[in-house]
Amino acid sequence: MTRRLNWFLLGLILLLGLPYYWLLLDNRPGDAQLKPVTIAQLRQLAASIPGEAPYAVEVELSSFRRMPGNLFVAGSGLKRKLIGVMAWRLPIKGGKPVVIDSGLPKAAATDMGMEQFDAAAQARIEAALRDAGLILITHEHIDHEGGLIALNNPTALAAARLNPAQISGNRWSEMLPWPQGPRPRPAITGTAPVAVAPGVVVIPAHSHTPGSQMIFVRLASGQEFLFAGDISTFTQNWTETRARSRLVGDFLAPEERREVFAWLRSIQALKAQNPGLVVLPGHDYEWVIDPQNRTGVRQGFTSPSV
Ligand SMILES: [Zn+2]
Image (cartoon, rainbow, N blue to C red; front, side, top):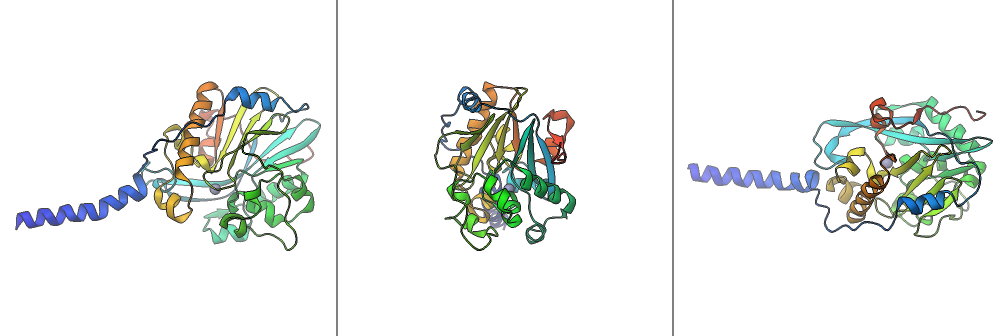
């Protein structure tokens, strides 16, 4: 009888434990190779367009929800993490600001089950989008690009420099609330890092989604930032080489996990080349604003006239 019970318990553990391990804990990065991108190359590109670079990084939190850590940082535990939907504004002395990502309109925030939506914050993001000289999107998920597309503002759309996958051709870009009529033409078409403004470099990084890209920024002060988007949803993703869980990354929001791991390792390499580099994760609002982390990011967008 005891033997039978042992077999039964072993079976139960395997039946529950293996899927749990596979879906929520597994973090084997495989043979993911470093990407051929260096800080020296990014700095050279950042300096290649003459003019005034941004002088600050500001953040707005449009909405948030809390979900178990394992979902977005495999193996990090079940404790819930705050998943912030953020947008960034980079003001420029004497010029129009750069805006990165665009928040989430209220209807979409409700659809996604956000716990809280900050209408005033989303309104500030939308004002910044209308006023921006350049808009970049880390990837075509609705909680990053949705605010821009739903705004349906010709000035903002003209300031946006999107890549082809952020416009059409995959399930995510097709889910965006596009208005009737022709969509914008792609402005970033290569696969190599490219300078888009003084101090601002786009790093194409097909992985989390087909249109994923990271953005390197060197402020006028020389301070450097890397906007990782959801390649690194949380800081723990890149510091501990932890991808999203397979439950999310293989099934719920499929991504190319191997490529994500390659970029996580490449972020580590870039940070090693410049320990002063601030890596800004896609949804880790609590980490971004924690004074202990000294990100230098300012909370709240300054008004467009500043
Ligand atoms: Zn996201």
